[in-house]
Length: 217
Picture 1 (cartoon, rainbow, N blue to C red):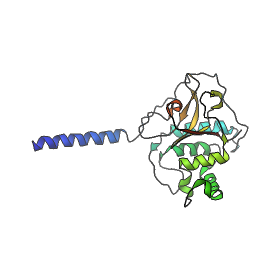
Picture 2 (picture 1 turned 135 degrees about the vertical axis):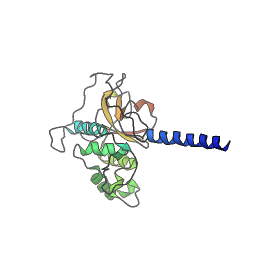
Picture 3 (picture 1 turned 90 degrees about the vertical axis):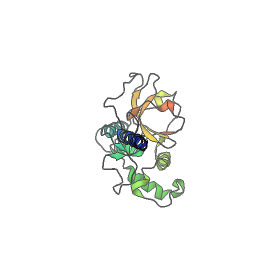
Picture 4 (picture 1 turned 60 degrees about the horizontal axis):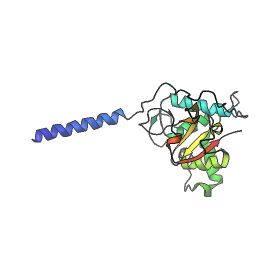
């Protein structure tokens, strides 16, 4: 009897270990979702090009998000003395930070400066440049200060453009240029070790939409 219990317990342990290994990394699709809405909504092109690479900021941010997602970062929350993760791991805020960095915006420096200029808005007891820009609530305040606030009404599909920033209660991502059959865009994001892709049709599914911003006109 004891032997059977041991075998059963060992079997459960093996299954649990297998599940942990299975879900340690995201099972991401190598193909972008189809744009079910076609080209009915014209993609916004901003008038600024901060890094002077000949690509407007809105497009640069969108491309940066897609390029970062293409590296298939593994989900893990940890501290980096470099600020930006450098080992293939990351969280939702890192996708946004790398997307903006692609356009010439260094969120690590920008958020740190804004926290020190407006400490009462952030409620950060001891500023830490390496981690503060990787917290959703800090980014919400930063984009309220420096971003262009846009609608959170999903029915206004023309106002949602690839390269915009979308913030939820405890999550953040970049709006995709892909749209579903209603014209509502997908979101490029890094949510957990268990999501099936980095670009997903999630806007209508969430009830915690907290903000929608754009970096430049």
